[in-house]
Length: 191
Image (cartoon, one colour):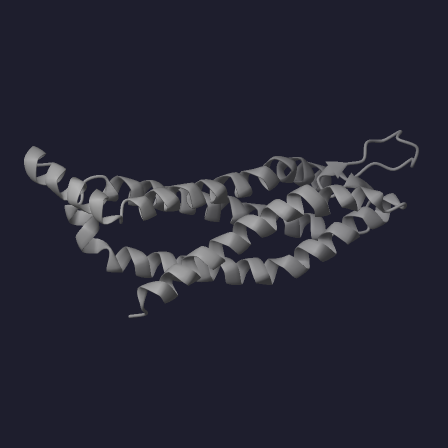
């Protein structure tokens, strides 16, 4: 098995890229796509950026998952014996699963938008309504996907950010004083 520093590095660097990349793209790329002068170019600009990010994001997610799984296996004895560790591990696993699900669904929607890159849009996550001066509206299927992506673009950084926070809690539980306290609580309460 890989050493703890290697696992922690995979876990942390993978999460940093997953969180930071999706946050940066939501903040910058999606809104910056509206700067393209021609409404039909706006989606293409955003799609090119997201399509370039996708393999990096997949590698980051993979690295995080390998690190997280390795840490989970290595920490099995502590999870079983130290009070509170199993709860934190379960919360972290749930948040990670939710982030994976939202990321996957966002990619499905993104591919739907990406397949029709030569359509008028206001920005990467905002359809263009009819009568906005261009004479053409975003097709309904692309508009629907964009509206969902507008919400999901913030859900992924929120969920991955929550994983970062719960990982900090898990790290604090590894302090020797917390380990002793958790073990004593488990022994004295029998739970």
